[in-house]
View 1 (tube, rainbow, N blue to C red):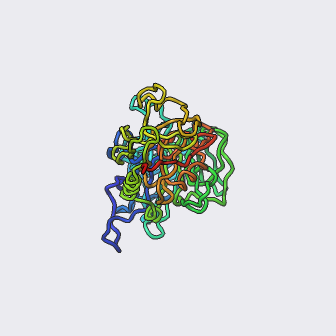
View 2 (view 1 turned 90 degrees about the horizontal axis):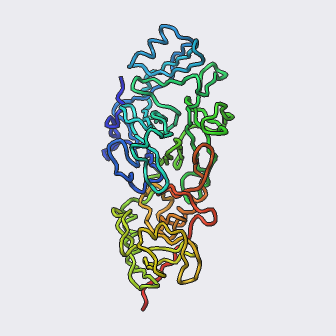
View 3 (view 1 turned 45 degrees about the vertical axis):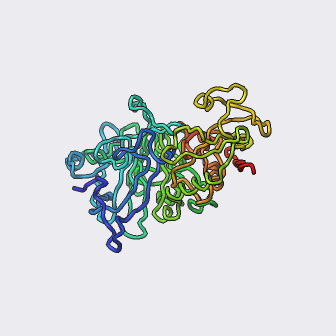
Length: 427
């Protein structure tokens, strides 16, 4: 009936510059690409573009019991439907009909056709789970769907759960579900879809908003006591499921950042980040111990330790080259060592290699990389470290903590970021 493939995108009638872009989803913890490389629908960022033919759907007929019409809606693979099982004897089926004004994009762990963007668990350190661990994933196979208006202002709204290969969503007896005042059904998925909208947009002056849970019908609720609790939170009627630039979507295993097309236009490009890297290296920073010149490796080699790699003491911010101070071990082992004493100021703290943040979508400005996250050592602009340091990301079933967006490693409670002190060449 409708194609769900991302290849079904259209070019703007008013422009020849390419398809109309609604926005992009970027996976937190991926510094420019997945650790194992971007492949097909499994990648670190996904562009949502207007399709050649609308594939959006909207609710229509409601069947309050297992009638022949309801059974037909479920079995018809050309018909989208949502089934709410209230008991063994009662199931409410809501038919969905084609909406020519919207495009639908689906996100989840499944690699089946209906999923446009395949998302797998991201663990701290910027690595996704091995295939052998996929069975323990807490991300739903059909986690959520985003509905975009095909015409300006191209608003995007998020809903929990996605339609499977039979174009159905099944909510079993154990799922938290209820009948609303207007008689319509609604529900929450097992581990939930959480969303946080930043206040004042995604910019250097933004402040984090409250984390909320989004229902299957797109209603907004306060959080449950734990991710899978049966009791839903309180409905927040003053808030909506419409995504804004900088909205965060947590799927219980991976967190996605939503960037609008307008927001991305103001974001530094990879080319700009490369220019900042070259400018930093052109200053020929020196190691104050070995007096050797330091240089950040190219963005392509963002995960490979280089002999000119800058290292830093994260308690004070002094930048050095790697040095085996006091008979230390090789750099690979040194990166695992928790504390060392800075030879410049004697401050004790983590001594780690510095890595440039290579994902432009995480930056709130285009300023020079002067600060590093603690304790991972990812380097970006001051305002970017400040912004992410104040955002608490969901962790596990009910915990929250601030984390580096480039590797999702939890930030230090004492000092989440540090200004770097580079030494210029001696005259």
